[in-house]
Image (cartoon, rainbow, N blue to C red):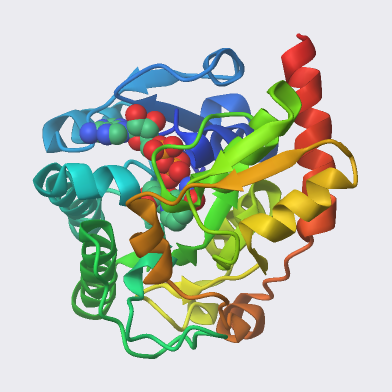
Length: 317
Ligand code: NAD
């Protein structure tokens, strides 16, 4: 059967680049982008787009029939920092969108689901260094609670209804094509924009706030790899730990100074500091490496070069 993909939340930071990559691999008409608002020009010109509210089951069903969808990537969510401002809305969106998609798979209307979890499933009582796959999870944000609950439901739908759902606990994702959507790791994107625009950045996290991070190309690669793996290789049906690199605001700043010698950073932590303090500093992702051959490629040095090069080209346009 021909693969036909629907991406819900395609206009966001990760959805934009995931859509572009999946279109490059599968052909533009095999990948339907959808969101509640239009994406950037590159996304909108790259293939079909439909307006879908992830909370609207009938609308998703309609599009699934229209394009004979086989695989759904559910990227719509309210992220950690925004979720703390609107806890009930975050819970509603993050849970109901997942049930909508899992129930389509349970009914046999689609074959495969990708749903991203996050390092936010961990909390202040989790071991912080090299956080294992299976460990204490007591998330302290509404976003983290929704992701942890989502993981339980994914595993439940796999065990009870044989739903082929696959998931990754993304770390903070760094990219330059689409803007970040209100997460705690957004500083590591803003810093590159401000370095180029103002030569200075005021960080909302302290200089030693070490967090797990990943460049977008590695995140997209992992997403496509886990979805392409044979079902028997996917031994964890809640969500896999995934790691690329870990760094602090001070370490990014040191790396930027290698390219922009006059760059200055200051620190003015806000409410996001306590979210960052509750998360791991580094992640043990050996299960993903063993089960479906995950390998990251990009470290802080390479990422800094890529971010500064791509953003300066973007600002010249
Ligand atoms: P984002 O906020 O950039 O994008 C989310 C997209 O969903 C937006 O385009 C938004 O318009 C859309 N959306 C919001 N409500 C919707 C609705 N009701 N119906 C349809 N679309 C709706 O988020 P992102 O950074 O691209 O994250 C994608 C997924 O990855 C999310 O599940 C997020 O929790 C997860 N994740 C992201 C990161 C990260 O660092 N970016 C880290 C861990 C996990």
